[in-house]
Length: 140
Image (cartoon, rainbow, N blue to C red; front, side, top):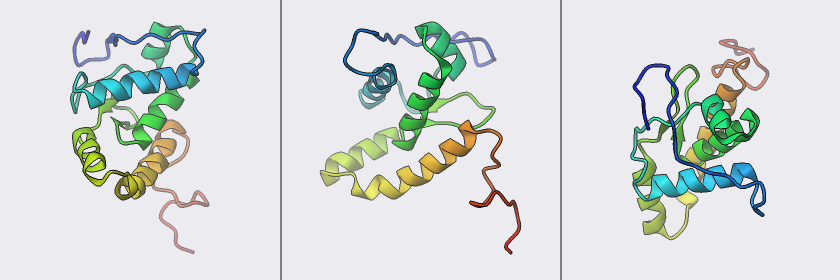
């Protein structure tokens, strides 16, 4: 249930089982991926912050951060530092492309770029404009 578009926490109806053969993170990924694919979570829909979802599910924040990073890399979530995570606007398009192609080879470069950006956002001490050596704006 979304309370409002401010900083108040929102509830997302997910559940995890510590007795499952799947990891907690994989369970979160599976449920969010399924909800996005089936239109339960529409493009642009806000999802809970990593802290809020971790608190709701009783798991560590790292589990949720890793699950969100994986979903962002796959194109299901849009993550930006300082902004609420949202279902990616391109979820429906990417899913349709994959079905039409019968494979995901065309989306691989997009996913690699999304993963790099996601890692930069999650590691907020890293400036996303920096090159591999950590320099911003220098080309020496």
